Image (cartoon, rainbow, N blue to C red; front, side):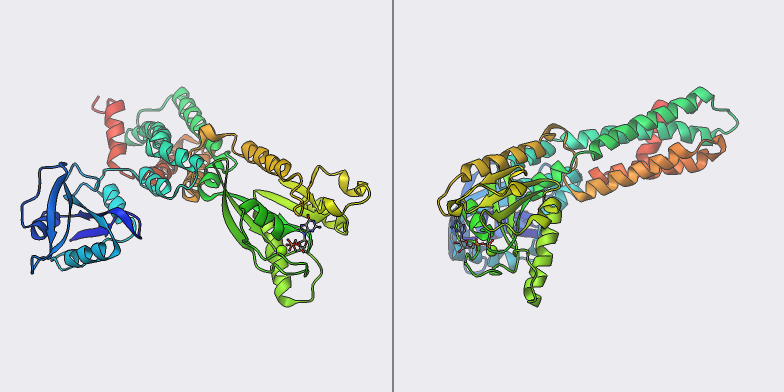
Length: 443
Ligand SMILES: Nc1nc2c(ncn2[C@@H]2O[C@H](COP(=O)(O)OP(=O)(O)O)[C@@H](O)[C@H]2O)c(=O)[nH]1
Ligand SMILES: [Mg+2]
């Protein structure tokens, strides 16, 4: 079975590329052009025709990538045509008529590349991340992983564990030879070292995931303080409805921003107040939840109408900036109960001090993304495997009796397997290989 798909974005463009992968790729080119496949990797201009009527669909470039040296490892072809909707549609329709050709599923080319051993799982994931990267920081993170930065680290840790396991397994295979105590001490020490490295990787403030998914900022505070106005101001467009009627915003309104390359998802929420309205109450509940899950809260209050002191302590406890809005209406000094908090006094109406607020947000972002260099976890999946790996290693380290080595070996195997799952390499043969390479078993 061969697969095909439009690999360029949907919509009108100068050029569109349709990719084909699988044994039928050469048939597709022959049937569409009436000629044999061009020389490998040589851009070749061909007329592309309807299969049965030979009517011209378009003229375009054909690229031929014979397997196994292709992206997927299979025979592949690319057809570059003009990127009009009708052209793309007509060509796809023709390919669909060819025997054993079907439309690819999402990510299927990359999945094939992984299954055919062309790339590991982390690289496959990073390709997806690179494609969806919206900001420079996201792109840099994806490209680092694509380059093998994290695979290298996880493979290294895994190899260390395999080595330890080979010692433990040798002991099981030759139980009559007593393992000296110092060897046991070394095995434990090596395991502890791996454990320390894993703990260090896990202690990352989730920076990798935040970069991939976006830094979450929640705008919270009482009704009518100017929360929706702030969202609109920061995103430079009318995302949320602004009105003097308290309780206007009920649902959470979210928008994506790029602040100095940092991907940010900012959400405006319902104003917090005692409400009898069931829908508004639900909105308020959502607000508080957003605030709790956010990486940063912008707590917005009204400078002249501060009846919110009770909430402030709680909301400002961590990762929050107090934004006091409507400074244009302020006649007297700020209430000291409120000014004692670290705050920015702004007026959205008069566009006052907004730059100060943005600077504060940027500083906060920078502080949060500080450990950029050591990021290895970019998905919850990686975190879960690492946590489970650490758990198995703990179980191993807890075993102190030599006779428990059988079970200890199983702990190590399970730990190794978890690391292998991150990179997508789970192969028992390798354990045997490691034993043979590092241990003179024939002696
Ligand atoms: N005077 C003044 N009014 C403002 C300011 N910012 C917002 N408002 C007004 O306050 C009202 C409530 O604003 P809105 O953004 O809907 O508040 P929210 O309920 O917190 O989302 C609207 O009538 C806004 O025009 C400001 O800086 N000064
Ligand atoms: Mg609002």
